[in-house]
Length: 127
Image 1 (cartoon, rainbow, N blue to C red):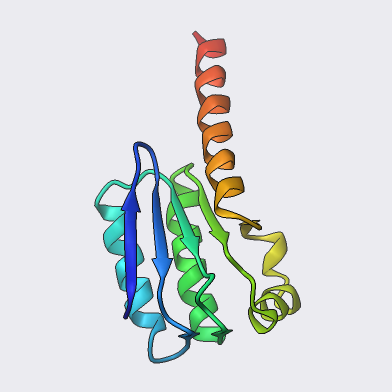
Image 2: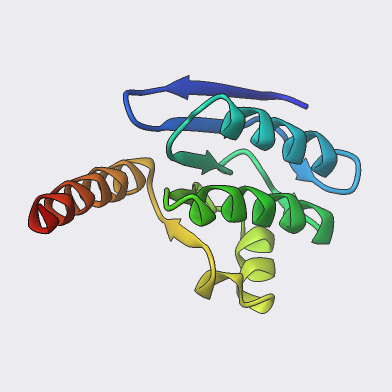
């Protein structure tokens, strides 16, 4: 599976370099997401701008990543959903109401920064 990871201070960006996220590639994505999570990456942005097709196995691997990060109270954000078939599948499956999706990488990064600020301010109020 082709991908790159860019690690920042409190998040990582995974650029998926696959045109097809299907039954053949989904197990690899799921495994890599688990590795990234276990490596202590607090928040993750998954960039799908190179991905033109996703099947149900691909959606399952994305949902695995979402579950890992959100159950730990962190952010898992999808961005770069530019290809109509990917957008349509996410909409039809109603995952657009479950997943955090941002149109651009910049918006995804801002979302993580705002969440960190919100958590920081929330922690101060409790003291």
